[in-house]
Amino acid sequence: MRSVIDILDLSTDEIGGLIAVAEDIIANPAKYENVCRCKKLATLFFEPSTRTRMSFEAAMYELGGHVISMTDGASSSASKGESVSDTAKIVSFYADIIAMRHPKEGAALVAAKSASVPVVNAGDGGHCHPTQTLADLLTIHREKGGFSGLTVGLCGDLKFGRTVHSLVGALSRYEDIKFVLISPDELRLPDYVKDDVLDRKSIPYKETSSLDDAMGELDVLYMTRVQRERFFNEEDYLRLKDCYILTPEKLRGAKSDMAILHPLPRVNEISVAVDDDPRACYFRQAANGKYMRMALIMMLLGLHA
Image (tube, rainbow, N blue to C red; front, side, top):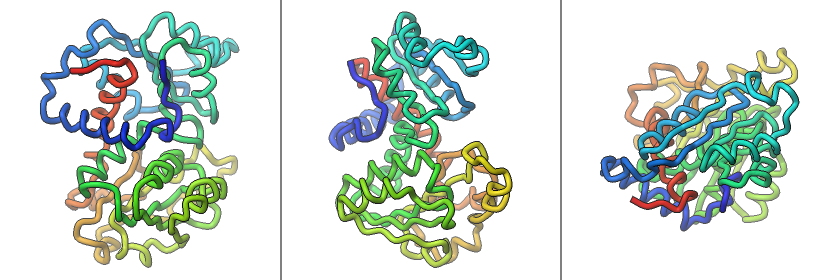
């Protein structure tokens, strides 16, 4: 039995295999309609979610499986003081695989150590979000044809953005990757990510507070939301929330084939006027998450079409 808590739990070969399966699901959906017949997915979400929870559930349904769901920690036994460990043990009796989101870093790892079925981390605090990264990777692969040789700009909340942390870790394993880290000083990429991933692997990167200055060199621009729920101080959030807003005017200096990604939800960091730009990939990215979660569920359950 195996769980996926961090994107680095998957090798690059395994990610390549998941992408190949996802591409086949897109091309031949009927082939996968009964792969998970009689299997159950439990979605345990102790934190609000739309895309992640619904895409996991849609993924299981489209594989012919079933879903049992907890969408609010307040309505679960956690509100009575039950531990994550005990919850995982109990839910393992009812489901074949668990997808869990939790506001505390490390909660998914605790669950995985106690569960008797595979656990997939659907986001743990500001730590990481591996299945969002799988969606990101499929999107980049489909839009750019691969990963090597790309200059990737990460913009906005790089401090608390778990999707950013996971994506840096994933892309750092491919050749000739460069990063441009675009954020205000208060929201810079944490030192542990720079030290443990970028510096340790001698991956070139630069930090800047100017999106305009960086725009022309980017192959991929990954926009992020400044996350109100990660701030302890409302004044700090209000001061920083509108620090970057992507508009058609800002895109005039960008490459004609640059891919614009965003893990969603957005607030106002990407103008709706950008949505019709062919470089805007974020809605395709959300759809890609379902296909990669289908592929991952199959892999962890040892199932094939």
